[in-house]
Length: 401
Length: 157
Image 1 (cartoon, each protein chain N blue to C red):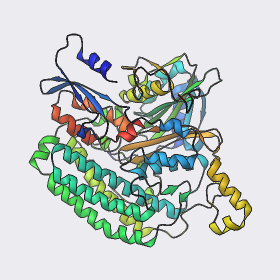
Image 2: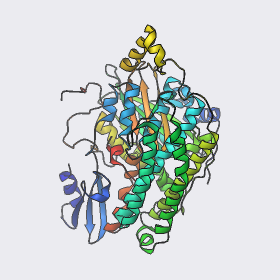
Image 3: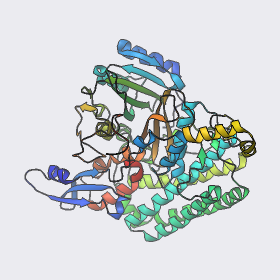
Image 4: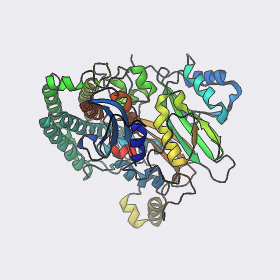
């Protein structure tokens, strides 16, 4: 894959050193490969090479029902599967015109924010480990374990859970989930404050992150950056506020922009604050969670009640039909974007009126954000590549799809 | 710089019509999403106009993708999703081309279109002219097919 790349950037005079980083390098967070042209310790050119994890999700989606595709979205951003699920469901529900009950909308905020917390905890752990702060990695994964336990309590699965369905939730979460969630929130804040104490004023940390990988707000917009990479440059932009989905228009939260300088430190600082805001959102949801069903009664997507299923032939036929052929979605197209932990996660869905999409396209935030890497590291030291990759916060499962 | 409230949809529609004139072949706002269809030859001019108009300012290149409709004379439909952060509005631009035709690269207008266009070229075989670096991105560079086209089999290759 990369021989052409190496020949191209080496040029004809063959000057400078070509350094290959990845795809098995631990700081590339998966299977990212970067071919670097070096001038001593400085980077002249960086070329990211991706595609090692390409599974053809968009092609597969054309032969699966809308509900089945949900399982594939888990495996895109596997550190925060809940967000990918949510994005896909909002897109399907928009296209099919399915109303989601109020309680499910609020619960989706909890699931979405738990996903964000899990994603950000993986990010801070690996990012700190890359830069050399081993203990933060251990603390972050301990805290993430608590999030995964919450998911386990919610649905039995820890990482790829697909807990939501078109139309709401499969079933109401059991009581211990709420108790455990409520008792965990203070613990999360305590852990986040600990990261803050360990890193934010740490000389080594500041040296590796301040003024590294700088991008201005206008450049960030022009490059299509989203999420923390955009906010870190001082642009206050969050799809949860700009185009609210689930119940985000009913909760209060701030949009942190870090120091606004657009460097690695700014992106670090704002993600820490984002975790605190996630906890703040979850507190409000627990307080205001309205009673009611968690699944719509729209017969197209709602599974018939179990007693009816065993006694009523039509209910059983409906049930079989729904799971074999999927539910029909009206002819049309939609693009829905949500604020995933990594940035703007968009789903473009084209339906031909059947139970399977005619075309499904994912606008994955990591993919678009990663294209800024050559710009961010040009002229910088080799060691800065590591901290810049960490601060873009990529997940290769989402980039390669 | 806080998030601006969305400008009324009608105002944006009116403005887009005023800026683009008869270059718009068709327009609709189904599901509250303004969609315009234009000719592939107008693409660059339309993109510039939408980005630079002081009231619209579609400054954020959201996404580009393509849909394959085999059997039609213009079988590839290229779809762009733009966003205006100042007006908090989105727009979808669609254009149709035949398989052997090409479209102008939007990377000339928004640098962020670079990788998304490479992906569409790779998986769908849409040729973007004036792209800074049009190479395959997800598949191998010596791969012969465009897997997201409808005539590409889903198994057995």
